[in-house]
Each structure stands twice: as C-alpha cells, then as structure tokens.
Image (cartoon, rainbow, N blue to C red):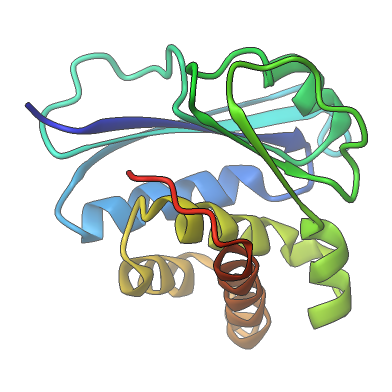
Length: 185
C-alpha cells in the first residue's frame, strides 16, 4: 500500500502560496517521491483568493486533483471560511491566527500559529510568511525532508533573497518544534 497525502495551501493573492506549493512539490520530487501541483487564484492579482494544491505519493498518482485534503493551510479568514470544512476527518487544519480569528466547524484537528506576525518580527518582512508557513507545515507533518525543502526553496526564489527566505523557513520549523504537535505523514 502506498502512502498518498493531499495538501491545500490557501490564502489571498500576493501571499506567495503558489510559490510555496511549487517548492513543496519540488522538495517531494527531490526526496524521490511522486508529486503533482496545481494552482488557482481569483482574477485579482493581489487580495483575491488563491490556493495551491499538492499531492505527494510514494507510488503512482492516479488522479491529479486534490479531492479531500489531509492538510489544509489557511492564511486568511476567507480561506478558512472556504476550506476548513473540506479536509479529511482527523486531518490537519493549520491557520495563520494573525488573520484567521474565527475557525469554522471542521472535522480536522486545528492548530493556529502567528505565521504572518512572526514573519514580520523575525525578518522585518511579512512577504516571507509563505516560507514560515511552509516550515510549520513540513515541521508538523514531515511531508518532505528538511534538506530537500531547503534545496527546493533555494532553487526557486529570486537571487539575493536567500538569507531572508531561509530565516523565514527556520522560524516556521521553530514554531512547529515548539508546538510539540507531530502528525504522521
């Protein structure tokens, strides 16, 4: 039996969740797993709803769309409202409680982290909240190896931002470690 996990990273346009999904899928491939990544966003370039979906499997991926995710990341209230109820029973809902103040009913286990606030405090730029979120997600689930995630990140970000993005990723790993929550992936 092969292990297959579905991830939905959601928030507002401009939060960098599409890039985070691409990096997560890239890291899975670097780990020797199969991965599929898809994305969608509203007609607005910034501020509209956006989501990235990633499927990671040890075996073949028969259907390339996320049907019922194991893990949902919600970086905005709109994303939480839209996707909190659409996660596997017992799955994981990670919310950025900087912006998500009301978590709708969900069959998932809910964990809130001040992702955007921590990005601002640690790096001076909320722009890298997506990397903090990726560090939290991977730190909690072990979806991909830390080394592959770092390599994928460095291969996909603009030159000159390596230190900033790595600091943000590390801050996310620290948040996950401090939470003492471990979700088998």
